[in-house]
Image 1 (cartoon, rainbow, N blue to C red):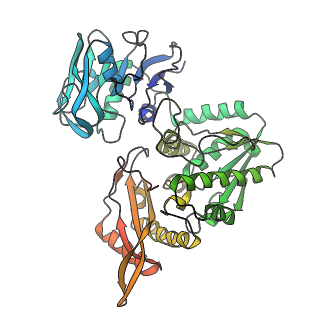
Image 2: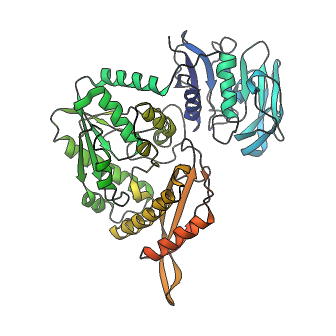
Length: 508
């Protein structure tokens, strides 16, 4: 019987980060919306309540009956979950005098099992507008910050805990330790769920789901589609048909390089150059969402054309991962929509293909771990994420072939510069953005009025939060000089030092 941690989702953008951390600790978990919970079976060993974009004080705040769980199973409430348990237990929650958002430090930590190994001064990540002002009887404070008295609590004679910060995010430095304490010291799991286990389970599920059906997959050369391809290849072999589409918005030389990349991997890959189709459709469109939807529409049209050439194909496979989904639609709770993604949301009725997404519950780092367990190349697995819409969302404003060529050259210099300087593997994602402004410059004693480009490099583990990378000044100076000297039409280079949140990794 597989040990399972149940995560009840109240709509937080971070809910899947909790799952990612739990799985990272080799423990299987499932996310279910609070308003559609599963039956509590013997395999459920503990429960975690997520955060939420709602306040517990709102009339329409999510409500859930905890009577079958609280006191019967180990229970951890995070942010909204902690406040909700305190409120329904007879405590008080009130709006904070100031919004508690961002980094804070624990000023007091008890010797409680939940905080074992978490030192005083440990950085935690706050994200809430309310705070617990009074705990119910039998609830005891086990952690505080300078501004938040009840940063953590326990319930007497129960394995019930609440914390008002997010241990799952990158910025909570000892958050993984806290979750490990909950899982191994309080719940008492054995921790036998691994990437290899995921591969075996996924391949078995794909075999059962697909049978002898044919599947067409869009390869991009990136980590996600490549790992998805290998999982499908293990499951259905020759019934997998891979297509790599050149949308005219790829990096320099990427179309030919990607096709070469898959040589020797045993995959059946066809290259399709649809540059004209995409560029014609994007002409005159400058609104970000309109660009994404246009690319998505043409992408589907191209795939429909290619799928029609494969006799009796029934499925379209995609390398969709969870950050694509959580930022696009409310999949497992009332999470807020940030932006749409070209490969999320299903297919139009005219396309007679069903969708299979073997990676849709994984984050980028998990995908890499799964790929490594299948002995895939380190070079491929280490490749930076690249957006599905390609350079279209790194060109602010309308798309032209001239702009694409300019950005391709800039990006080529930047990415190769990172590789040559030994910095590429120290960065989670890097790219260049063409801004819709011109600036005055001087070249050869002549006045110029040309484009501005922004360079972006971030460090992250999952793409949900990210910090800008402190690239060496000497490197930035060298790259800037190369771009301005070698790329006609650019006379100014800037470096983006924004973190996510509040910014996003991409500019559109």
